[in-house]
Each structure stands twice: as C-alpha cells, then as structure tokens.
Image (cartoon, rainbow, N blue to C red):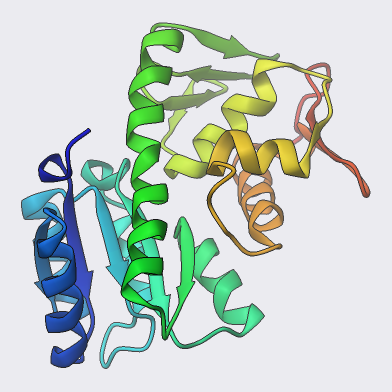
Length: 238
C-alpha cells in the first residue's frame, strides 16, 4: 500500500513539535493534518478520517486521554489507529491510555527514523485488515447468549448490539474463534497487535477487563501465567 493512501493526524499543543513531525512525515509521502488541542483534533479526525492519529497526552483543556476516549465514541473512527506520543512513561499513564482506547504508546524523545519504523508497523494493520476481511467476510461466531458478526463489526449480546473499540473486537473475535482453546499472551499479541508492535505489558489485561465489563465476566477465563480462553458453555449472569 502506498504512503499516499495513508492519512496521519498529529495532535500536540507545541507548534515546534507539530512542525518537526509534519515535515518528516510529509517528506515520506504521508498526507498530514495537525491539531493543537483535543476539540480541534476530534473535529479534524471526523472531517478527514485519518488512518493514524499520533497524539500527545499532556495538553491544556481536554488532554490526550479524554480526547481519545471521546474519539472512540464515534463509529466513523472505529478503524482509526490511535497512538500516544508522549514523554510520560509511567505505567499508570499507559494504562489510562489503553483504557481510553489507544492502540500504542510511543515514548518521546524518539529519533525520526525510529518513529518512521513504528508508524510503518502500525499502518501494516490496514494491509492485514484488508486480507482478513476477505477471509472472514459474512462469518459469525456464537455462544449461548453472545454472537459476534465480523462482517458488520458488531457484537450481539442477548439481542442487543454492542459496538466495541477495534482492538477489543479483534481480541474477542480471536478468543471466540476457538472456544475452550487457551491463547497464550505472546500469541494474542502477535495475532491482535502484530509481532512488530511494541505495547505495554498490561495492554492485554486492560482489554480483557474492558471486555468482561461489557459482555460479562464468565465468558473469558484467565489461566494464570498461561493466557486466556473463551468459555462457551458458561453464560454471564447479569
């Protein structure tokens, strides 16, 4: 896939950083948009539908986490990859970012060539997603009270449709594809995030917890030190 097919939105309240990143990404052939705050970022994202958003966490007014959270409420941005580019490397900050719906967390400072590599790795998901769509189109997986429709990208729980963030949906689809099979953490990282994506150690745990909140905590079983499996025979009690 050519670079010119990819749109990138940069969000940062520091003009120098926006200018520097924008220059380097445009030089690589990407179509680049910029925003200096949360509200402007949401408006631009909805207008341009970028493939990737690189966003700072610490911004005046609406910060990056709040902005990401609001972006994830818009179905038009379901397939958009959101990565935080920030100097804040604390574990709690990363967890907050992933809980808000971010896909990756890149620490500043970062060399332009390294950033280019990370961006290319993130954007590979679109190529993989296109291939997957051809393979799984019109297929569904179902349990006693849960149906996942991969073509419409929705989960149906007791007749009610749920729209999940992209990574939560892909994680649930993976687990439901082989009920009772235990998926190891490394296997989940490779199949959902990609083996060339670097994400925090708590990423899977956060996404599993969010899934349990939405579909019930009896469907997904943790095997400590091993991984997770989808338990088909158990029905979540409301």
